[in-house]
Length: 149
Image 1 (spheres, rainbow, N blue to C red):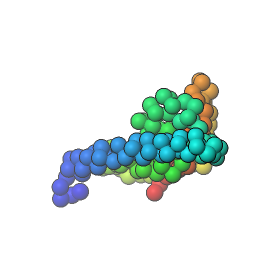
Image 2: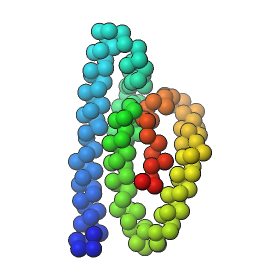
Image 3: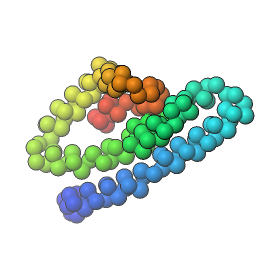
């Protein structure tokens, strides 16, 4: 970073995130097409349940998948990587301007929030306003618990 400067690093990270952004959508479309066919032909209930929110609320699920907030389990690792990739430039600027201790304390607080099931409570409060409710739609990885990595 010292050789090329922060602007170059920021540009490279945004280009990488933009390049990766479409992959989860493509994989999700393939997964739903294959799953819908398999469910239709075989009546496979576990597969249907795995993608239930996409079958029962397709417009909501499709819109939220564009915001990287609604992904099936194990497909969400790529979306989590993209979100973190987009946060790195801002966090580097904050760390350079305000000091790294603020980031470490904030990161530890967010991790503690995740350990106390704060993300679950946040999800419950959002779901209480009538949005389709499926924890499976959030994926297997808790984004609040991985920022220390």
